[in-house]
Image (cartoon, rainbow, N blue to C red; front, side, top):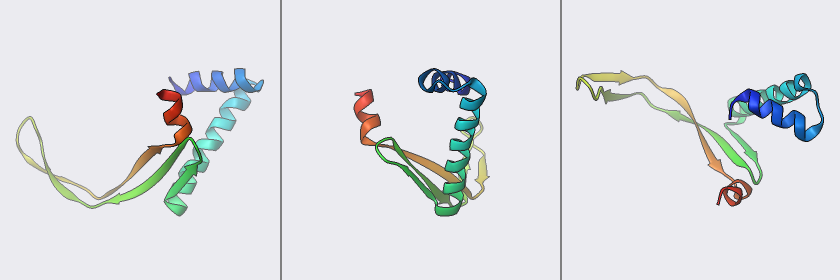
Amino acid sequence: MTKQDLVNHIAEETGLTKADATRALDAMMSGVIKGLKKEKKVALTGFATFTAKKKEAKKGRNPRTGEVVNIPARVAVTIKAGSKLKDALN
């Protein structure tokens, strides 16, 4: 599903215009990003928990050439599915 597919779904389910649905989706994504930057965790009860985790720099290996490469430190996001999401998929 693409972002546009999701916007269309939101518009159909809520009766919003596609422009309003796009703004709502953008606001939700912006809120998740702000929450991860500020508090390192965003919990949408029953759906998912997003967590920002700091990863240290490390050495890796290019599988094609075998060359050692440096992987810089970064922040990675993990997503843990909530109970409603798990139940819906199983």
